[in-house]
Length: 179
Ligand code: HEM
Image 1 (spheres, protein in one colour):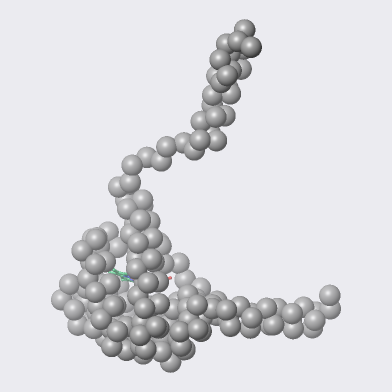
Image 2 (spheres, rainbow, N blue to C red):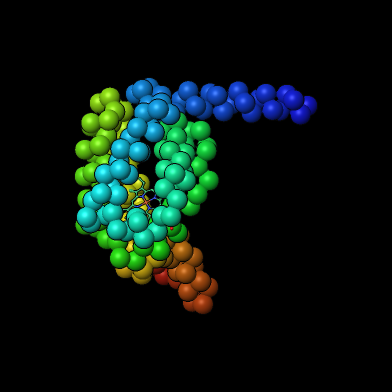
């Protein structure tokens, strides 16, 4: 394929992806994202529990808000604009726990219901809840708070096979003499 054909092909694929993005069907636009993100962080900054955590980390609020708009644009409109790494950014927040996340989500839900049309609000809320869960899981893992992972059934089967190699004549069907 020629270079210009390849570029056109990729542009068409990206346009198709954007049309299939979850936000499109429920009326999420860049303007809706901007309204939600700006209203939410306005409240968060004034919040006694969450405000100080953000103020300690964010020097340039314009840049942070632009990054968060890119994040939600990538999640809901599949524009691929977000280039950050949320997991390590949150893993560094060692004093943040479940109560903070619950409160973050309360403010997010209230803002979405006031700022967005109802189907768009429902999508913003569902996605934030899902992402919050995976961030919390990642943070717990980074802190060593999760129980050790058991080896997978495949790994266990491999180990059993290893043991059988050491004791030939026996396999999972029983002694070799068994019909
Ligand atoms: C209690 C809950 C939360 C707190 C206190 C919190 C706090 C923060 C802070 C302080 C930063 C800046 C980190 C840095 O630049 O070093 C950040 C970045 C970010 N947060 Fe959160 N956050 C919370 C939950 C969430 C949730 C639920 C989402 C998504 C649904 C989210 C999305 C992001 C994103 C996309 C960034 C940018 C990451 C990057 O720079 O690549 N946060 N957050």
